[in-house]
Image (cartoon, rainbow, N blue to C red; front, side, top):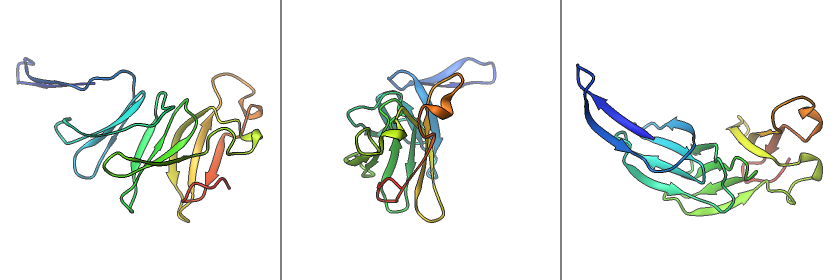
Length: 152
């Protein structure tokens, strides 16, 4: 990802490049920084896009979304890794959940994409099943986990 500052004549006055490939999603944070989902890692930056922290877990592939939680943890969806992960704010992996083998077979984890926290504290996850028709027959497309990661 590249950030360029331009002057009034559109000349580049400053350039900052964040190394990585395939930026999936950029999430603005309350402090002015961002979560950048960059394929096999999530990068938290300050408002100037300088890296502050990295979040990585074995199996990230096109990691999709990172969300800071009120308890100080960060919740991440792993994209094609098809799992969810809790991290400390400093980037240490706490645990993963929702992987193949830990959910019923009919779920068929494929691509854990966007997610959100429900009012009751549960985690709702979109389990994308691919492009094309018949996706509703390939697996469960909307998953619900408890706030601690238990499949509901």
